[in-house]
Length: 165
Image 1 (cartoon, helix red, strand yellow):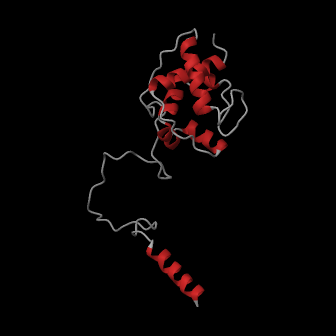
Image 2: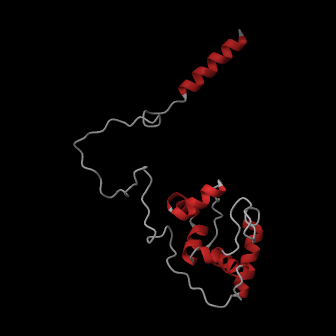
Image 3: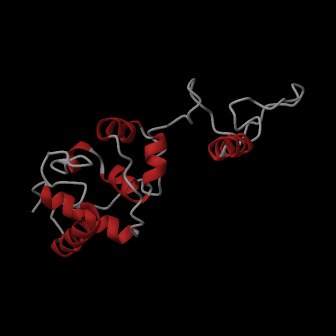
């Protein structure tokens, strides 16, 4: 009898956890006479936000990168890599949790890398390159909350890893 009471209580609890009609995949009734909002971002056929690869999903549109490596900045980037990145990324082309970093500065532009480092969630949600990497790795990169200076130092370390002197 005790088991039956527990099962009934559990069933009632689960049933009471339901949300509104919109939470259950049912669209709420709308008034067809209202005009569509034009300030909403456009979406693709799948309902995802559209993406303009030239718009960028962060604040970096250009990154000042010299031809020579900034050794001090690269050294700082190496420390950041050791603390925040090395558990998921190898410096070779081998995938660990995330992709390997070998030639990453040749595969992606400096602004793209900087935006991905500092604005990970938006990039994974909207950027086709980031989404393609996610399909391969199957794990979203967590936002490491790096400052712009830390991200720039990390980028310089990536350049060092790619052979820039």
